[in-house]
Image 1 (cartoon, helix red, strand yellow):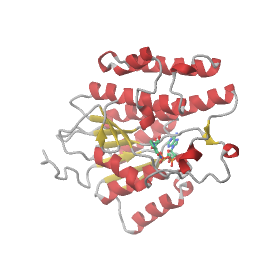
Image 2: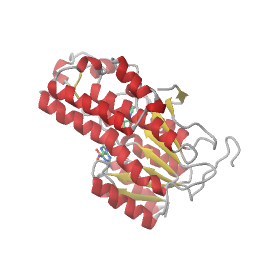
Image 3: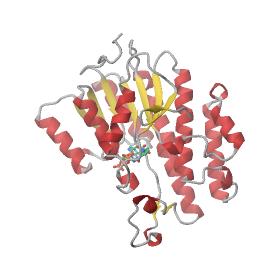
Length: 309
Ligand SMILES: NC(=O)c1ccc[n+]([C@@H]2O[C@H](COP(=O)([O-])OP(=O)(O)OC[C@H]3O[C@@H](n4cnc5c(N)ncnc54)[C@H](OP(=O)(O)O)[C@@H]3O)[C@@H](O)[C@H]2O)c1
């Protein structure tokens, strides 16, 4: 077992990162590659349609002869894409030591019409986030967000479980969550209790909560029990956090599973607004991915603070 602070990883350590076409995911790949791990960088777009920095990253890696950075397409919402990826990984790489579930969507827009023209306060701009217009669009948008942030993440994670390589330092799963995933903004006490008691938690219970949420969005009733701020995004990350705790329990001596909020990061998801750069946000995720052996599992970090759920 590696000593505290010692590097337990090597170029044989395989890290899979989702949603790495841009933003935080790309920076996670860059930092893991800089630390010498083998990085399987994935994105739903083909390589030639990735962001310019992502293409540059892959191009420079290829020019430097770095064979330890490998790209593969992966759309976590598509069962076939997940199956194709896992088959390819099995054949060409064999196993996984670290999975960073970074891919995510917010599905909100800024109502620029409501923003005062002289409003220079970036946070005030974010106060004008709007959901889709109309019930049917809202429902579609809510389903899409849950399909990516929760069901897609769970789909890929389950498909990769058989490839997690047993080791003394244990494989790690890092679920990229959000401060919006904390339980307290959930306004219904019963729902909060249902998601909070890990021992009684099941996948079915999480699904039931999500079905209930979608029904409320559809009927436009009962929305007062859900978080008032970014309800869909929030509930997607609340359920992801519940899954983190459930999976950590299920895999207790086989893998470490943790949730991490990367900070308020200047990425496309936030219309370029935020407190820190994508590289700074990525560093919080990489920190948890590379914690010394014997570290926590089933925990939730806001940046580097272990805060509970
Ligand atoms: N930025 C923040 O302040 C902040 C705060 C808390 C949590 N987070 C979380 O951090 C993660 C990364 O977000 P970001 O800020 O870097 O946002 P971003 O720049 O919008 O990047 C999101 C990434 O997810 C990918 N993606 C979306 N749907 C996908 C799918 N179905 N399959 C595979 N990839 C998919 C996107 O790919 P495309 O290029 O193909 O769209 C993109 O690469 C998300 O989980 C987000 O919720 C961000």
